[in-house]
Image (cartoon, rainbow, N blue to C red; front, side, top):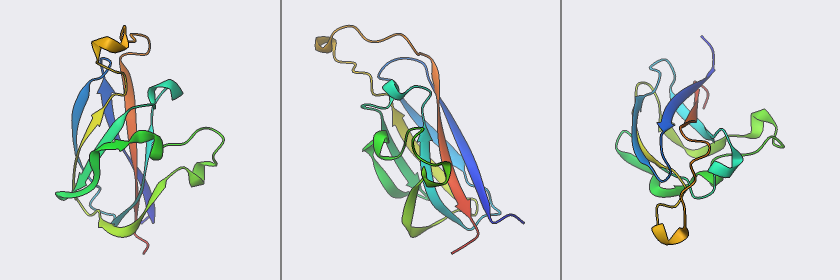
Length: 132
């Protein structure tokens, strides 16, 4: 069996400022979640976007965790893009729950909401591993 797998969770954001719940289960054949990477189709969508994440009801990121801390641009080598978890997080069929909130302001005082780039698909990659 392979030692690593990159499991993808996809979330479709239909409108600016939308907040969406996500739910998934990790692959049962892998022991731990080693890291996370969030990919958005345009760099302009990163600012203000938030991700909350729980693994087996254990909070990993509160709902207001900025996605810009979990993503990187093309200038970063592919094998260095992931935010690596220092602690051991169980995979092996673990329940993944969370919330992705689009960064576009829904505050009417901020002016017109952007419409370009919607809908889009956010991809959350979990780096699963059987290594310690």
